[in-house]
Every structure is written in C-alpha cells, then in structure tokens.
Length: 582
Image 1 (cartoon, rainbow, N blue to C red):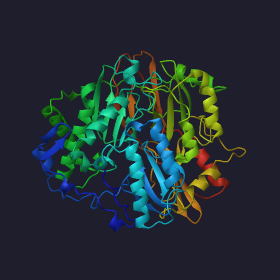
Image 2: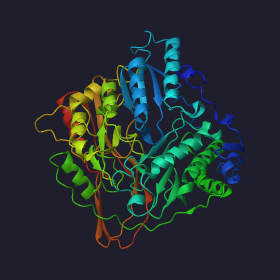
Image 3: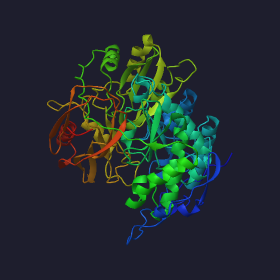
C-alpha cells in the first residue's frame, strides 16, 4: 500500500502540488481499453483569429482528498469521494469510527454527495498537535482504514471519482427510463459502479481535476440540474444521451455503452483543454471556440472507439401543467401514499425527507443532515436499519446533504423515521431545517467572517409572524465569505457574511437545467416564470417526447444588508418564498 500523501499546507504556495496539464501525454492517452490515440482536430488546436490565450488556471489543483489532507483552523480535513453516493453499511461504520478516533466526531456531507472528516489529528485516538507531522500520522491511519473498507480502489484516482447519480432511481417508480419501459431500475447506480471502475483503470483520467463532475440521471432531471461536466441522461427507449457541459442535445448511445462514453468524453476534454492553453479544470471554463469543438471531438472519439453515437434531437412541446400539490400528510405512512400518488414530478427537484414506497414493496427512508453535518452517533443510527444482502444493502448519500436508506420493511419504517427525527435528523419537508445549508465558517475556516452555522441556527428559531419554509421554499445557503464554498445549484437564497456582524441577503438564480421528461398529453400546458419579470405561455402538447436538457437563467432579485438578529431571520424567511424558475 502506498503511504498517504503528506497533508497540504494551508498556504497557497504549498498547495499547488497537482501535476500540470503538460504532464498529461498527448496525443497518446491511456484509457480503460488500453493505450489509444486521441487526435485533436486542427480547429481545436487553433485559437480563434486574433484571440490571445489567457489561462484561466495557472496553479495546480489543491482540491482536498482522502489522502491529500487540507490544513484548516480546526485541524486537518479529508474529503472522500463516494461514486454514485453508494456506501455499504460496513463502510459507513468505518467512517463513524474514523470520525471519532481521528477527527472531531462528525461526518460532513458535501454538495456532491461525498463526505468530509474534519478536525483530523484532534480525535480521541490521536496525539495532540496540528503540525505537518501530526497530520501525516492521522492521514496514514485514515488511509489504512479506508483501504480495509474498500473505499480506496485506486490511490492515483481518489480525487477524480466525482460521480453523482439519481438517488431515488429504482426506489420510487419514477424516472424517465424505469417508468416508461426503458432502462432497468437503479440503472444510474449500475452506471456509477462501472464508470468508477473505468476511471480507476484509465491513466489519462488521473489528469482530471478534483472538481470535474460526472452526473448520471435516470431521466427525472435531478442530476442534470447540477451543472456537471459530463452527464448521462436516461431515455425511455432504453438508450442514453451523453452531454458535455451545457450541451443541450447531446449524443445518443446504447445504455450499455454509456459509462465508457462518459469516460471517453472526459478524456477528450483533457485533450481539448490542453490544446486551448486555458488550464481549464471544468468544461465551462473552456474558451468559447474550444467549448464548441469539444462536442465534435467527443463524437469523433466515440466513433473511433466503436461506439455508435448520433445527435439526440427531439421536439420540445410546452411543459405539461403540474398536478395540484397534495395536502400535508398527517403522518409518515400517509406521506408515502401522497408521494407515490402525486409523484415528485420531473422538474429536477431533490428527494424530500420522509418515507418512499418502492415498487418491490419495500420502503426507503430519506433524511437530511442539519446544515450538512451529522455526529458519529447520528451516522451510526443510519446503519442500524439492517436489510437483507442485495442491491438495496447500501446507503445512498445525496448531493442535497441527505442520506437514503432503502429496502426497509414497511411495518418498521414509521418507527425508524421517528427514531431519526428524535435523533435530530430532518425527516419532514415542513421542517425549518429542510433546504438550509452552510459552509464551515468560523472557527474552522480562516477565511470566514462569521460563525455562520451558529447564526443560521439562530435564524431558524420559530417566531410569531415569520413565514415557515414548506416543501416549495427556496433552499438557503449561509456563507462565511464571498467564495460561497459548497453552495447549491439553481435558484437559492444567498446569505453571505460581510463582517461587522452583518450579512447580505439576495436571491440568486444562476444557470439552471430543466429536463423535459417523457410525457404524452393533449392538455394545455402553462408555464409561469417570475422574478424579476412575469410571463405566462400556454401551448398544447400532443406527442410523446424524450428527455432533453434546457438551459435557463434567472437573475438576482433583491439585495439586503442586515445585521444578525430578528430582522435578518425575517428577511431570509421571506426570501425563501420568492417565486423563481426551477
């Protein structure tokens, strides 16, 4: 076993230890199938006439990993990638043990469905000290625990295994493929396992940034909305489309070829990024001309690899009207019925906390971690619901800082949900904690201007006249500085510390991606867009359509600067009721 890499220094000068783009061989790159030649079209190598290549990235990638620790004010930090969010019960118990023995006793869930351990070197099983030697010691011990649990299949690739997958796939009967006779239940999870194996076998993939993201979507649009670099989107005909960045149409491939196509798309990005001279780590960072050429380069690369790929073109009628929202259920069992009857829709929204009835007769429990953080005791409680060995015998960690426990006996699900609620987990969409996130803030982060977690908790205290959150409330994210580490995608309430015990509150939209799901309807479809302008359009849809990706942009509505206290809490609560395009 290789020794754990020494922790990186908190100083920027010592954190740029990743290989440069020039270290990735070109034009010969190794892939999962061996060494293959990836020629780059001449138009990709040439810059636009008269343009000047200005690198967007000049330093190495300092993104932390499980072996490459980051020095923070509260100790060393390790980030462990969980492809597809999948975690066996034994692996989950290993993380709880590591958090207690080596860290601060907590497990953090990231916005990509990965986990972080903080305060390493300060746990009950470590010697006091925060020096480089202390960090290296706990890093070596952590590496041993992760290896033993099967969480580090390839040390060279541990930071590039960024794969998210539709967490409810196969558990709720929805999704473009499963519901319309296409892909099998849980197909994105199978894709995740295969893609992870291909990544770990690819020499070229080691050149990917720790920020490069793969998203595997079962057709409901939840993963497609996360702004990934490579997205696989299931289609009802049993095929899939491969999308690079914001490419709307994508390339249609056989479902069996989808994971290999995703890897080849990522390898092709490395070639194009190097040719652009931009130092880009993400597809969206490519210069415009090279971003356009990437699609053609990916198509050519798939063809040379023997993968049949064709442009996925579909007519997009107006989106059908949503059914009326069901009344708030009286208990968890009633919530299961309401969820299955009305469905979560296909608008890319994350799984709600509560119970979800699966087509096989079992029940899944969905919970969210308050502010994305669980104690080791809470984490262990999630592993207490043992299920029979099989595909369901794994937890699913979600990019919305939640965990789904599938395969449960319906007779015990209500009791388990109540135990989770009593332990402090978010189990009800009406909880004020639902949809609320925060960065580390003070005292853990030196760049933070406030203890955002304490301020967020204070703002969540109920008060007369303050609007509640509710299932349709915008997510809110508290940031200790302008970097907004870990903020959500799409529309959200942005609460940023400005110093002097004050925050700036605004509604941010950014670019969101909506997936038009498979539907057949002749009813009028009305779409309403609000904030800052309001427009209504009505059309009639009479054809069945396949999933397609549509990019829309919303803008910031109102900005307020407020000190901590009741006025700030009121402003945040009011902002969450803003109506925006989702």
